[in-house]
Length: 125
Image (spheres, rainbow, N blue to C red):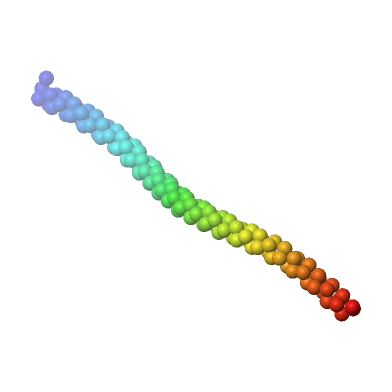
């Protein structure tokens, strides 16, 4: 083999190696593109998950506020029920007093009627 043949062989091998390296670089480029796409998709999912978590956090906060408002309304209701019971108690006490007064008035009315009868008899007689 001559120097020229050896050179051609080496040159051909070198060209083949360069072509393989070029193909591998191209494949790596495709893989990098695929990985980049996956990273972008993960970024979108992460953003979506972050929005979902934020929405859930807002919902939990709203539920806590609603629960707090509910407890406040329940406390107001209990206070109102207590006030109503006190008012009813006062009304029943007043009704009892009215019954006693009505009895007293009925007795006085009877006494007045008796006095009127006596007066009427004394004037007639």
